[in-house]
Length: 66
Image 1 (spheres, rainbow, N blue to C red):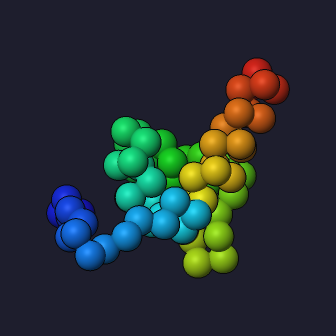
Image 2: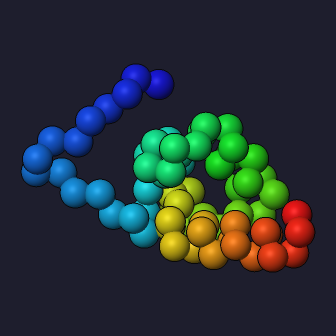
């Protein structure tokens, strides 16, 4: 997928990011987030990622020692 950059009129919604955009924002490989989703990380109904919910899920996973 080609790297896209936002124009000055576009806004990022951290509560509804495409997996690719969430990966870019977090500095993670897209496959890492897709793997987390396969393991139960929360997504919105449209498949987008809420960064707060994803971060909370990761925190819970770390606390559980996974």
